[in-house]
Length: 384
Image (cartoon, rainbow, N blue to C red; front, side, top):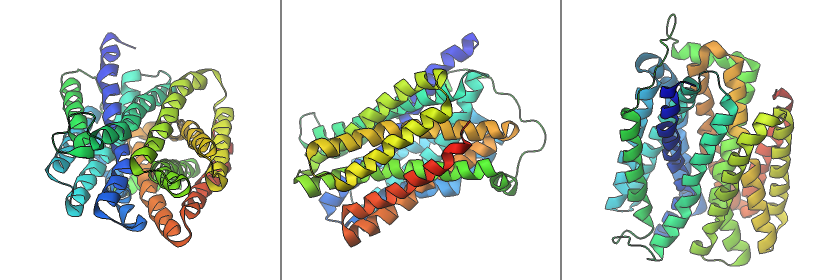
């Protein structure tokens, strides 16, 4: 890696931290549900809406990168994200939160589509899967901090300026501004796109490649389980153990702590272990977790299940994403757009889980996530 690119990795990793802001939707939707007295299916509209925009914006973002470059696309995503975090400072009415979460989803769709290929530019042939996993580790730090900051704000243990749990938004907004300033002042050399830029139809046609389509569905399951767990875990604890929301909210932090640990150790394991073996170990942990969430009635079993899915799901995205990028190396921007469109799973899963939990309780939500784990077992033979 060149000296310039070594310097570039710092602001790029701070952008991964900003990418983690999207995971505040899990705990935020629980607070909004409590404050506004919403049903599960209505409250789950908030995380679903965030990830709906990945379906709309991911492929166009891949095309936008071909025109303005990866770095400028990441900067645009940061500006949109900062604005989304500004809105909840002025209130938490349902329409305002819908607008805020929509903008957060749009900004994150742009960021996830453009930041991962930017890492490939910075690494210049280095270990892509391992570096993406380290980026996911940095992202997970922002994810597990969100419920803690929200709980502190709600309990007034930190100055919240009358915002309560919403103090989370200005704290993350300041970090977003810092990431924008650092990245904009960093020089990153990007290779010009060779030949004619791909159209929307050209991008979607790549789903005709079996490994690209299967990886797309794998990303859908990964993010569905991710969003589903950090939305549903607190509800399971409140339902079975009688916890308050503030107490149960720490379950989301537990999930992200183990996901953070998984990303950190995964960046090492992916260098020294067969990727397929590590993938199988990861999804086996997730399967055990689903059993614990379905049958568990004690704090120890439920916390162990949350920890298992956190660690198991931590490296799935990086492995599936890297597998897809390497399958069509000459179309990385377009494949990136398609893979990030797979984050639309964060819309599909919470909606299905909301309806299932309204119908039969939280075990219904767990069954929806378990279906995603079954698919990942089916995908495993495709992993190199």
